[in-house]
Length: 203
View 1 (cartoon, rainbow, N blue to C red):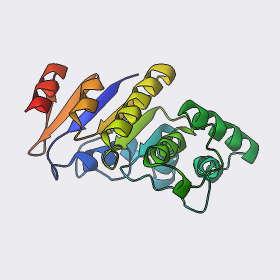
View 2 (tube, helix red, strand yellow):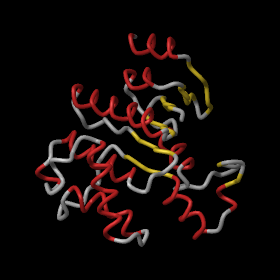
View 3 (spheres, helix red, strand yellow):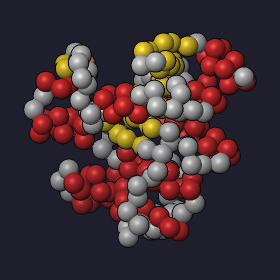
View 4 (cartoon, one colour):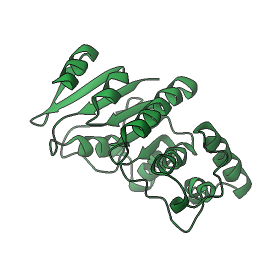
């Protein structure tokens, strides 16, 4: 049940680090350990199963399918994993309710606000009940007020469900909400305290 932010200048490798953590990209060297096991020692099919079962992703753009409504978009990962449609629907309704969208189940992406679209994306990432949620600049396209609501949602999800949260962000306000901060400088990892993050945000 941890919360960690990854910060750094553009192009320093934040997204690449997140993709390696999420088993999307392979590292050039070294290991990625999950519960003591090197995930990249797994075969391709096993790695895909691990990624689908254990990792949820939220990106800067919501990537919702415009022809489907919110409920159908959230059900999609569950259906791809061959879950029964009735169970997939039940789970999707539950996570959409958790992110505050129980009244928007049957609205298509174009009928939702930017903040609502991103909440649907968060719900979609949660539908398979992953142990880890990875978010890459999740509020980069949102205004300040909407961003704050998404930040609060992430923290409440961590507190209520125990999901481990790792967020790549330029937003110092979001970084300050995290328990730990990884800073990338010239391709190397540094650690900042919450006070140092806050001071950097004021500069």
